[in-house]
Length: 149
Length: 247
Ligand code: HEC
Ligand code: HEC
Ligand code: HEC
Image 1 (tube, each protein chain N blue to C red):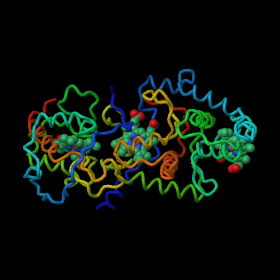
Image 2 (image 1 turned 90 degrees about the horizontal axis):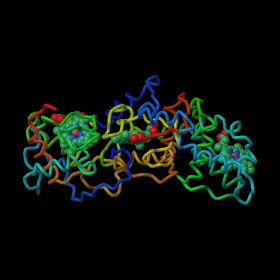
Image 3 (image 1 turned 135 degrees about the vertical axis):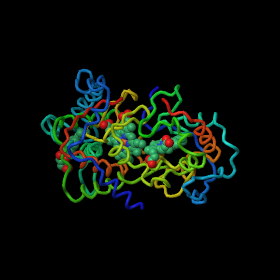
Image 4 (image 1 turned 30 degrees about the horizontal axis):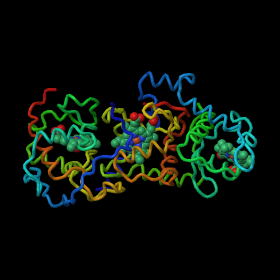
């Protein structure tokens, strides 16, 4: 089924206590340390998160090497080669809060709760992904060394 | 920083000459359905609306036709100038219809998104087909449109996206399987194949809001009417296409 921008679907609630992203230093190198409380990332789980349009939402905007998912977006880059373009620390920063690299970016900040307006009650005070999910996604992105489509 | 961002986004609003109807972004088969009344599933609702136009309702025992006569004459051009300021607030077309139900027919207002209300609204709106959108210039309506404009450019929801970021900056691209249109409202109410039914403009706006995980105002909320009033300003001069067909 084609994914329509229709809303009304209940996204899986991702409840964790929100940490302030201001706690992470914004250096050009990204965020070198894994997010507090998370185990080392699992690339297979990360792939599943990216593929899931109610959880990662990545394929709304990006294309990526996930052949079974049809109707990928083209608002943003192909994720192929992301693990070659960026270090783990840089990838982590891009998922945690892409707006610290480009304040005008349309890419949501996946691990941030402040500075948002009119958040739906079911999502208020929650980050889009948990610390563990961020680590899992970063672990998968890290495996994407090849950028040939 | 935030202010600078807002100003830059505002500056990128669509220039009048690059406006394209939402129908341009759907498949040729869906376009054909919209073009041809014999194929357009919305006509079923609209026949219902036409029947209602002539049917007495409420304790007044009057039909719409009792006062307004032939809708093809009396309602021509009406949809093109809604939302409009009326009795102290800005109302959209279906709210205006419900005002007549309550005040002129002494009948209960038709529920939001009911087949009856959508049919009647689409029937009235269809009488303006081909006419240019012409939002009223009075102070009440323009103040509402100005508030709607603010909301249009505001980043909202857990995904932190504004209407403008998708519809002014990213139109024509694919958000997952859907091509992002420019958010013109002149084809509403529309028939949506996915719903196998009709929906109002507010239903569309609410879906876009819940898509970015923002608070979704109730049907009829003033904020939604204000957004509609702003969309009408953006659409000024574009032609009414009701009833549209969407995937
Ligand atoms: C609403 C759109 C949107 C969503 C959703 C989104 N991104 Fe992005 N992403 C972008 C855009 C646009 C950029 C380009 C950077 C910029 O805007 O400054 C980007 C940049 C990136 C980059 C760095 C550029 C590259 O390809 O090397 C990575 C990596 C990335 N995104 C991964 C993800 C992952 C993983 C997810 C989901 C967990 C995701 N994005 C969700 C829009 C999005
Ligand atoms: C993340 C992207 C995104 C955001 C943010 C967004 N929309 Fe939309 N909008 C869409 C997409 C995609 C569609 C078309 C879906 C379809 O018809 O399949 C759409 C459809 C519409 C339409 C119908 C156009 C037509 O021709 O049928 C209107 C009007 C609209 N949006 C207004 C808004 C307003 C107002 C806001 C802010 C409150 C908003 N949108 C926020 C993506 C977005
Ligand atoms: C008893 C008389 C009466 C009945 C019945 C009636 N109306 Fe009206 N309607 C009016 C009058 C008078 C006005 C304009 C004056 C005003 O603003 O109150 C009006 C205004 C309107 C307008 C706004 C027109 C404009 O130019 O802004 C619409 C739309 C409308 N009616 C639709 C309907 C519909 C649909 C029905 C049936 C559900 C209906 N009316 C039933 C008397 C009636």
